[in-house]
Amino acid sequence: MTAQTESPGSVTTVYKVSGMSCGHCEGSVSSEISEIPGVGSVRAVASTGEVTVVSAAPLDEEAVRAAVDEAGFELVGKA
Image (tube, rainbow, N blue to C red; front, side, top):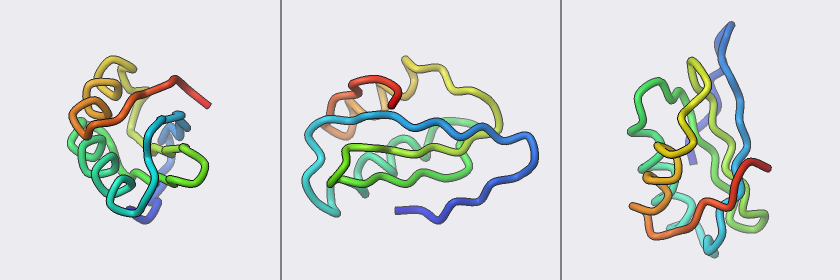
């Protein structure tokens, strides 16, 4: 998990991800999403399936979907 660092003008989006069950899962998803340009922080919570992303601008959902897929999980959509 990454600490949230919001700055003025940042966008916070919560996504639902299926398949996460542990801290390793959270780390895998967070790591992949963190590589998307403009992402400031990511916080994944396996127990709820929610991934909170703070970014400089709204993210392309397909980029988030590809990152989640790369981590081995499925993006359900926005929470």
